[in-house]
Length: 192
Image 1 (cartoon, rainbow, N blue to C red):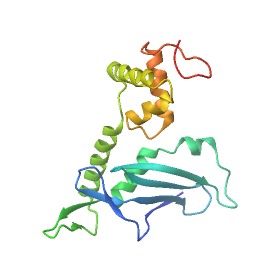
Image 2: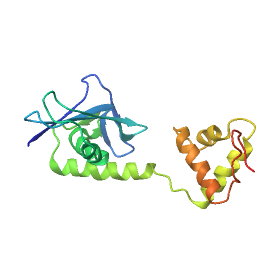
Image 3: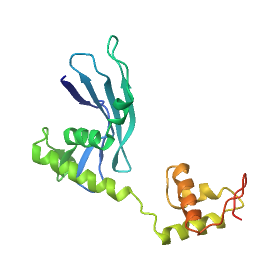
Image 4: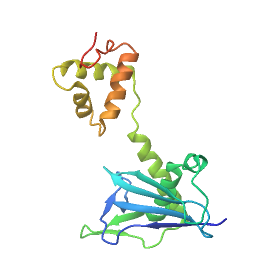
């Protein structure tokens, strides 16, 4: 089995900077991997650079007509970080700023530049992960308590710049688990 991998983006997609790495990439790009014989599932991964950080936004697995069915092992084998790194190694470009302020980047990617792009993106993505320290969980509890009359979990999300209420709920749960917040009251915001 030989898998064909293709990385693509819209010709009109804007290019955006990735952190302060002097690298940029299309705002949105796609990786497609398909079996050259047409028997194995096809994988399509959609990526976007959001707030300067490349992220996987969608994964699609499809089976070709006449091919085998999709299996649990197919789903478990998808490693989003590896797919992101492969895609970034092919689309990210380093750039220089010309005297007129324009970004000038190379047309091709050499192996050293691709490897450097992967290292840089790993560093960037590592900076986006937050460690839930005792001090941070105390702050989560304080923000939650200060907003118990409204929507305290939403207040936690807004205060810490979280893009997901789910993450805020997890942080509140962790604050409860370590004793910074009391047990929840079923159906109500607050603590016992």
